[in-house]
Image 1 (spheres, rainbow, N blue to C red):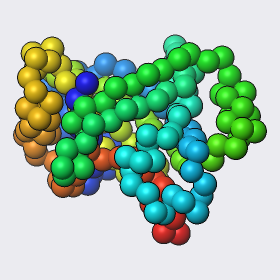
Image 2 (tube, rainbow, N blue to C red):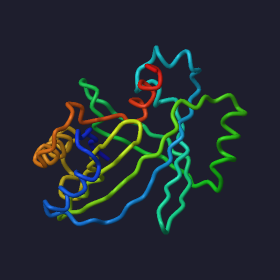
Image 3 (cartoon, one colour):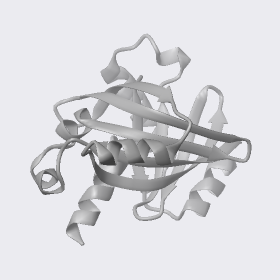
Length: 193
């Protein structure tokens, strides 16, 4: 699966309004409460790359909406290009019954929690394109787009370019990183304070 995520330098409500005005239809909203655990210790986190950290990270993910309360353990395997863009991601997940029990197991086994945040999600569709407008309190507003059916047979690099062009066409003031790594951004912000 190829996806892109870019930071948008506008307020959440402005982005949501603009998306509707440009022909997208609202689908749903939900929150991801993501808690990241790793085998690395706190002092080691300043010396390693995002890829190294993620390769040794397990996520406790709680997806919550009006009609949903889904709890999973998630492992992500990401393929990065030479520029650090995530061009492919494979997620392995298993359903669990308790976030608190999972946290207790991880902490008692010596794993370190390096990120704990809530990602607000607002999904919109136009044709086969689904965009996810996201807000993280500590970081700001983001847009994420995943590959869709008509591009599934293209190369990962071609998919990345197509998705990037869709984001650019929306006309938002955006950052240069089309593979925003929100948990890593969150960690770096925490380390800077």
